[in-house]
Image (cartoon, rainbow, N blue to C red):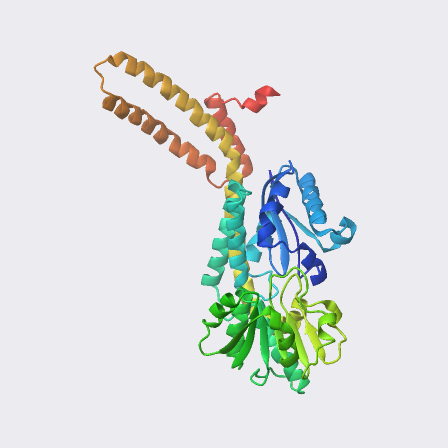
Length: 437
């Protein structure tokens, strides 16, 4: 068995490629099923966010397993492998483990140390468990990745003051507004007529950061009014007017700053929608949805400025340098956690021998117990039989405890193999697979 991850991220692929490989929650089940239908893929889990798609697997053979994942990606996206290949990364075993821990800790995020990625990794674990696509290895690895992400945030200051995609989007708006006013500093958004399209988690963070940056009232548009009103109620100090998406045109006419973050699979704002509108003034659009909510064809429309998640790099660069030292501290924790998982992985080598040893002793116990009980005669009560049986099981477990612990304990590969050979020789534990060859 072999652990492998295939994926792409903001580091390797532009948003126009990433959006074609964005796997929404409603399609995760069918996607995992498609992956598991390949004989080479034993376990699978999918991490899909606005900045990355990563498929974590346990495969029979590295080369054949990767080929199966690539076939799935091409089929899902409709992109030929020759076009997709330059944007993909592939990590095997040790590197795959290290990469996952880095992702969960926020060290591979667009915004260094951002906290939202940890909840997305938790979601990946939950969906993998719900759809029965993960086995003992990925369950162990992904659960450890979550605990590692928590540990990094509790034992370092990486998560303190960390910006999210949403806060970076708000800061980008401040930066662009300042530049339009001939200023290098971030400016307040108090004078802006702001709208947020969508009422999900990202929009909640947008409202939180908009409020902290001077925005006093805004328009919130959503497919359902109830969800918009529920979100607005969480910000009693912010004046929020809730409308349905049907009023988007009116919003585009009257607002100066519009953020979009919806789960729509096709753009909701494009040139054909914007050009006929009688807008009141300059309009700045910031899209943090993937797939994109704003079509690329709005570029060049007079009086319109559009940005997507890839444009957040300008803001991120301003905050990155100060966090690099903390990131180095976090890297040390990741190396420790990676070593612990690899020690557990190595210990799996002992499992077949341990199982055969346990079966051998259990067979002896059962035979000897039956002999003893048959000598006791009919006067031996059912309760007494249970006590004797429990006694025999307890003795076997006590005998097994030390050798099993030693065989699973961290040690050099040669040392473990020597120990396994000695145990197999002493107890005559023939491997059934070896006898079949």
